[in-house]
Length: 74
Image (tube, rainbow, N blue to C red; front, side, top):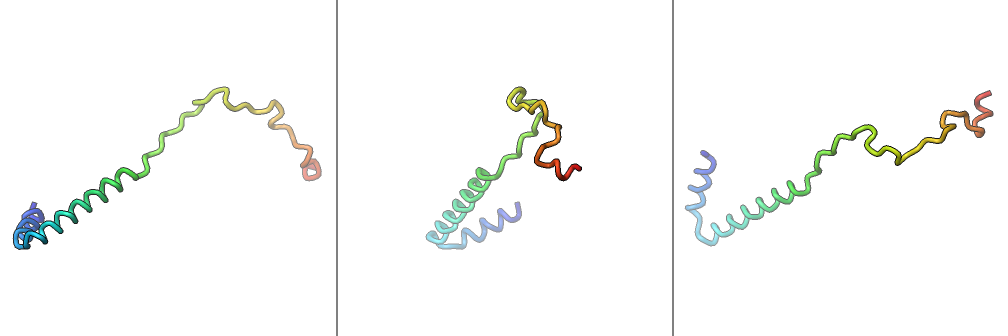
């Protein structure tokens, strides 16, 4: 709270038009802070294994050797 008291003490020493500028600057800082918080990336959800059953299917011969690689397998 010491900083707050220092701000008030300095603010009251300024002329009224300068106090208005300080107010506008404070409003700018608050808007920047809320803008930053609104655009902060949300924490990704933890993925659950098996959450989309039946959506993807592997071919029955998935583990079978491919013909294109026969030269490399011999």
